[in-house]
Length: 586
Image 1 (cartoon, helix red, strand yellow):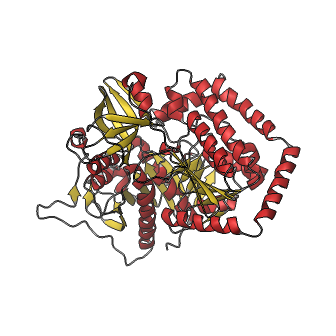
Image 2 (cartoon, rainbow, N blue to C red; image 1 turned 120 degrees about the vertical axis):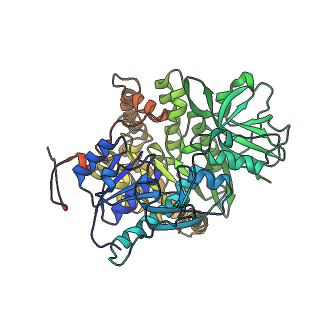
Image 3 (spheres, rainbow, N blue to C red; image 1 turned 90 degrees about the vertical axis):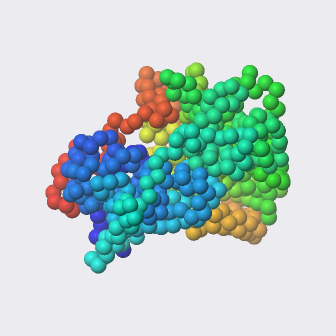
């Protein structure tokens, strides 16, 4: 491992999940990281001049690094493809072509896109998942391994990065262009369910698959297989919890989200039923599915409950971790039903990719009165959080398989113990969304775990925490497993052990006593009232910062500058040599 701590500049299109994961992993190794959003060449050049980094890493770029930078500073591109793969749609093509193995390569920036010398590459087996899911999990894990390996090699004087192989025609690597919209189209009468799923999954997140449903031009997102329902290929045959089920020639698929296509207008990605509207869906049956139902075959559902070995499990597969008011209320109903079972330990599993990211900003933005919608959503989150806090007759575990942000973090902290997979990243703050104050009883939950001073620091620094850092901060109780799948298996084993542990009754007695003491010291209602007093100003007050930030987020408005809490180099007053940084303390 490289012994000397380095000054590393991240040049990135946005501070996305991969950038955040690398940020926490490299800081853990002792490197100093500053971030600059890729806005234009001049801004990039200025950032390099201010920071004078030892190394520039580009974890997520949409254009080339300027020659004026890579000629004079070592620059690494983190490319989501194996050695020799080139182009902006690497993962899209891998899913489209049903690749069984894929990888991540760390390349040195050069004059031609993705043709630089190779510093490291890591491979992984492909699973049947969406582009976004693979990117957040397998790609991020492989990127961490590859960057760490490249850093080790950077410290080895004998290592020389390998050039890309040159083909017979003189080209280096294999260039794969962006997939055209026409190439992504679905033929409902001819394509199999497997092909349709791959096509929609390969376009997940962006750009979606262009199609027409019931006469409305839309883009399709987030598809799941359905093995029992049948109908005329292409027909909408059912709805469930905001999703639509569409028949294929050999089965059916659920499509949870759509974006309306209208020339001259940019529409939001929203639940499919909301986009299509009641009139178009008139006569299409709603096919509900009980969260406790045992399934035979493939289908889609947002909320699932099961009881095994004295443990009750509650999963909630909400798209991108966003929780609308209606979803929170359905989840609360499921939680109350789970509490009435004989399960002695209750495990909140969240979703496979996200635990929760708090309130549903897209749904709020789509409402006519966004302030009222925001209030309704946060109150529903509060009701759910309080129900978990007040579950004093069972041991409650929050098991985070995926990342969590804002109110989703504090929903997890409502449990007695919080466990996480090793690659989980937490963003336990609200201020990035227009300086929101936040609710979900954070002012009760965070100080009781971290202490008052640490709680203020956590809420104020606006930076992500990796799982080990979250343990040290008191937000997590355990981190284990080699990956997400191994973590999920171990969660079940540990939960069963807790359910049969002889000291469980004593733990519950102590839990009830502590809750009574806390309530006597200050009732939960007072925490909520104080938080919501601040939130009322955020939603209804004179300062529009939250509404502006929400609009920019959901409409993907390009960044005009890098926030100062990320751009360390723009907070410096002087730089004295390569290793000494003097910060402006005024």
